[in-house]
Image (cartoon, rainbow, N blue to C red; front, side, top):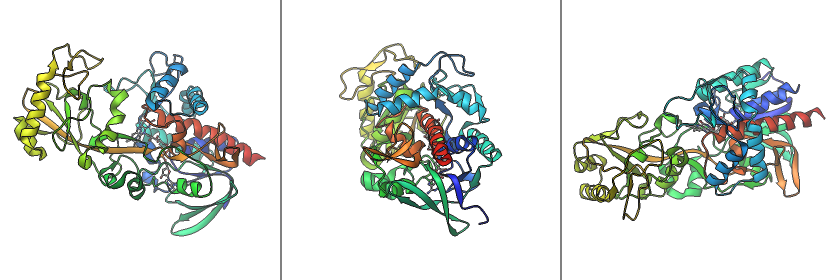
Length: 464
Ligand SMILES: Cc1cc2nc3c(=O)[nH]c(=O)nc-3n(C[C@H](O)[C@H](O)[C@H](O)COP(=O)(O)OP(=O)(O)OC[C@H]3O[C@@H](n4cnc5c(N)ncnc54)[C@H](O)[C@@H]3O)c2cc1C
């Protein structure tokens, strides 16, 4: 292939975590190669779809408002994970998140104001100008300027590891197998969310109905190789970030445009036209990430968000048009639901609504009374035609099964032994911090912080 086959640092993956590691190691004076499975146009995995990164900040950060103390960040994380987080790693992530706006800017990344309607995250999340693709393009440009070798269309197909010590990576490049040796290795090749067979292994046939929001390249191959070579696993294979997305979205890579935020404004029913969860439990940013899982547990993994005309237009516009009808019965027919059952569900809901003052920006007093499944906030009768509906399916963002890492980002081989030269960053190790649940923007925090930590460690090892 006309390239050296020996580098100080070999990085598997081409998303945010990989680039943060590669840039860090290159800035420390090391020779670095980035092995990206995707072709150049699709480089950057799920990072391409992101908009923001969650950071602790003490005020004065450009385009951010207020203050977000590390302790509040940690409390938020504890709450969403039900305490299932490795506390020292979580605290390290949060502490070093505060460096990210400045550090990423130094690498050329531009930030902008949060868009209107983006879940009011201006205090906690920094938004990339040009989204994740803008961020990636800047990081790639910087990596290139630092002399990092960037190979696209080059999946890592095997790893040579001797007793927890990385020797080389086998890759496929331009149809040919090649071995690339390195002093240190950084695994940043994402989760296994695009591996439908593996999803099926853990979820059963229900996984056939999952849609994958991001890259088809995150098949978990590097993760599997590492676990087979004795790296300790972390996380529950059934845990993942999954949201409700439009059932008409493509199987892969639909990105953020297919997400639907209509849920809190009406009711959600399953195939039997029955409600199954409190649509108004909490503010949408705190709850949107539970809906993928909830729908995954429904028959046929399908659900329908139903609103009336007074709520239509209060949420972000959808990429696919809503199905609409002048009566609930006709809407049911369009959704292929039993019209009588849907009319009954809507009538029962409407009868249970307690009048209140509607306010979508806070936990208002519009609720139901007497229902087996309550709606705690934003409950208003669904009574103004035309009626609108969106079919919903679970949209898998990323999986949490990963490799266990130490505070230095080293892969852990056993309780008493961390690898000397193998590091991990991003989705492939996010399960250390996210035992379950999700906090908007923390995927990029984990990837950026551990990308830097891994890059520092890999460079230091390679220098010895
Ligand atoms: C639609 C969507 C929106 C999101 N929005 C946000 C957001 O706003 N904020 C946030 O924090 N998080 C968000 N996330 C989650 C976020 O994308 C991830 O947490 C983050 O990008 C992970 O970075 P990463 O570098 O670990 O993985 P990725 O960016 O997915 O990169 C993994 C890379 O590994 C490569 N790869 C896979 N297998 C191999 C192999 N065998 N050999 C070589 N390379 C391989 C892939 O091609 C890919 O380039 C979103 C995700 C999606 C899908």
